[in-house]
Image (cartoon, rainbow, N blue to C red; front, top):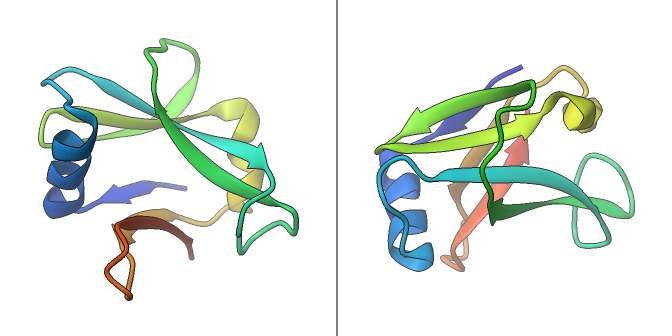
Length: 95
């Protein structure tokens, strides 16, 4: 399981959330939304620091991470943060 974040996507988050180098973004499982993996659940993202066990990737100086206790949502697949085909911002894809 990996998190894959293209530099352009990271820059989008930097601009939208006014992030600074070294900031951390927590990707978490939430109830509701339009998730494609587990019906009735989806992923969210929040600026939040953590040193708990997690998978992580750094892109453009920003750490994107998911805590180990929520990795069940990925079903042993990779998580891609990518631009939405409709141009409505960034979305999550599990594949």
